[in-house]
Length: 422
Image (cartoon, rainbow, N blue to C red; front, side, top):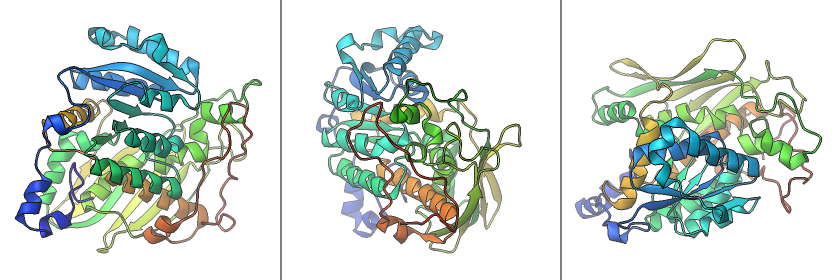
């Protein structure tokens, strides 16, 4: 977690000047998979709002890319996304770069495999988070560069799977950029640089907030023709195995900033939470909490106080507060900030070797695990440590042959004292 944009660790500096110099060598473009004089080809997996916006941000962030393949488990999502990309006003200057022919429309639970095999250079992963470790692993095995939305999974077993694939991506020098867009925002980059230079003094305490409004995707409920699996995907934010709960899916942004500030992950956490606004036991609202407060502790004794909440018609706050030996700072990012297109500019520049190599796979995977650690502490009522997470057997992902009618009940609503961490 030490580096701003690449996986170089403290050990690189301790290994001597030659090793440190090698670690920061700009990769020659001709050695980087995907480099070429022509435009780089993008394949989108997950065609909802975030996937569609990622393509728009990429078109704005780099002039030499084109979208050539799209995949989603739902045909209406894919076609709706493509229609928006072709008709949205801000996309009109980029229409010649939308080159998704009918044979490159892939629908179904194996659509991701077909997108990866379609001759693209870069994979965009924007499905519900539960799928991302599997899709990321497949993309890295196929030697593709990746833009991956956050978070990087919803349970310890599969986040560790993502971490293993992230290690392979570094070995292969594949670029990996995350949807944790604060890592590409000029304000945050400037503040972190000043912090690293000692300008702010020593960090003494951290506060992370995402206090907002509920995400309810299907307020009218389940349609009669939808089977369990289709319903859970249509209403994925309310289902733990797909979403990970708010602390994982949304609050990651703030917790990731705190880990970035500290250069590492916390060692332990205790937490509490529940559902006050969301009606418990209803299909629409699912099996997640609507508020979690957590107290994390890093190895050096610094604490991070984390609070996320989703209530209707209530006070809102989205920011990080960093208390140092010299001052107290409040950091925040407004919607539409430069981080969104910048993360795509960074992606392409790294692939082409125009900037030092970028790989955010491991760092944001650690932040994902940090968020899951807080969730599990709230669900169980126990103190949860990093080592417990790295040895946990919790695997939320369903097993079987996936289809729209597949039976899947999901997990019970978590009640501290009854819920068992495994």
